[in-house]
Image (cartoon, rainbow, N blue to C red):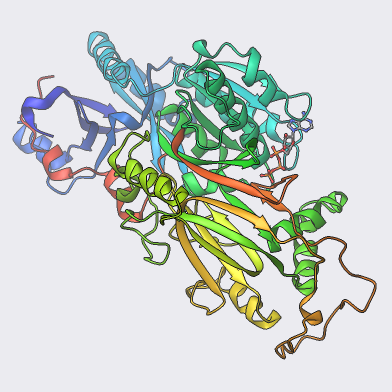
Amino acid sequence: MEKQGRLLSSKLHQGRRQVEVVLNRCALAWKEIEKSKRRSSGTGSVSETALSHAVQVGEIVAVCKTKDDDPDSTETRRSRKTAKQLSKLYPHSFTVSYVRRTSQHQWRCSDVTFHCANQGLCEQWVQLINEQLSLLSNRPKSLLVYINPYGGTQSGKRIYEQKVAPLFRRACISTDVIVTERANHARDHLKTEANLDKYDGVVCVGGDGMFSEVLHGLVTRTQTNNGVDLNQPDTELVPCSLRIGIIPAGSTDCICFATVGTNDPVTSALHIIVGDSQPMDVCSVHHNDVFLRFSVSLLGYGFYGDVLTDSERKRWLGPARYDLSGVKTFLSHNYYEGTISFLPAENNTATPRDKLQCRSGCCVCLHQPSSKDGEQWEMSEEKEKSDKDGSGGWSAIRGKFIAINAASMSCACPRSPKGLSPSAHLADGTTDLILVRKCSRLDFFRHLLRHTNKDDQFDHSFVEVHRVRKFRFQPRHRELLSLEDLSESPKKTGFSPICSARTTCNYSTAHSSWTCDGELLPHTAIQVSVQCQLIRLFARGIEEQQQQEQCVFEDPCTLWALEPSTH
Ligand SMILES: Nc1ncnc2c1ncn2[C@@H]1O[C@H](COP(=O)(O)OP(=O)(O)OP(=O)(O)O)[C@@H](O)[C@H]1O
């Protein structure tokens, strides 16, 4: 911490210890003054070895003068006797609440209380820190919160009231809270009624379905306000100005996991408080020029569509229905015919197999134009135009597919830590189109297994992956066949066929359904367009280990190039 950048520096007390506390525009730091040196020199020089702490100003939650017998004060709780003695000697104190990183991307709110004898000095500290916090223009002051009381284990309301609301209060964030009364309540309210000018962000307490409601409400409202027709597949959508916060309280919470690295309500609340911002791509899905839905994670036809269709019939089973339907769909081993056309993201330097994971501050996403007037986008648009003339740009593949997946993010979750496309990016304006062609059960099993281990899941002859900006799918309408009903002889898999076309357990349709972020689409012929960085979340992406460490300690050596303190 350079001397000229120092806003205030004092010798204060933290419990029984005397500490040197320093504030500059970036960080608040404190360090114990070694007793022996303090006694001998009396100059205020500090020990080289003493423990130092540094907190970025951007990660301070709040600061306040501590009340004499504040029951919330950690130190008061720990030792009332010490606190009493201290309060006689140093009757004035202030508490700084800040973000502390724990394991596995989880954040906690910690408190540190500093005592001093001088009331004026105490007030000066509080005022200065508050002044620095008020300069952080990215922090929300007012939020609109929707709680789904029935998401996940039906604990959304309790999670919000017990874990999140107290933190928002401490950070002086005002909230309007709406507990939803029906499905699509949040979406409809955002679409028409909500006075969005009042807020700096919208928070959903629930799972991915609840997030999807808020996404649809907010994006639709933004387009309506700007006179944009959602039914035009090639229209450029207007990015939303309000950020979305997700307090995970659902069954899967994939979007939260992919953008924060953990499904923990306190961590999410702290990311909202510090005003983090994570841009995110949104796919718009159309059928014959009619808008269907938005997607931010997975659009899946074939295997995943069938799993969802089957699991919807088994809702009474709870989350276990996904496992059961997964096994059943796997054993059914259906394939579907159709044509998939796509516009590759040709100017993208990153590829789905480069093992470059999207992490906090991702350089691939950073270099994408957030609106479509960027050079890169124009080039793609040009290519598309030329394709319409029949001269290139788009590619088309006709075939038989067990699964067609478009992953706009890795789709990692605790069950599949790498996800469907480990190198997919949150905000690079592309989606990873994964085509799993007709293959044996055993081969498909091998492919699925790779979602859970370190092997490259695309390294199979029957799997291909393309990073694309747009795609279309047209099913070939004819009766569905199971693999065992092929005229060409099926490979020996080691599995005996569960059902075949000769048995009655067969299929009435020639097509599967699309799952769109966990919702079934009513049409199979779809057009998909990635809208680059259409929304922003109160998140910062998953931090690498070293990023986490850097955030805790800037550089203790420069922080402690201290001159004798002024107080
Ligand atoms: N008050 C309500 N009554 C009934 N349904 C609701 C209500 N509020 C929201 N919903 C709907 O409940 C569905 C599921 O909610 P949510 O996503 O919060 O939980 P989940 O399904 O358990 O979690 P996940 O989507 O992560 O698996 C959403 O699609 C949402 O539209």
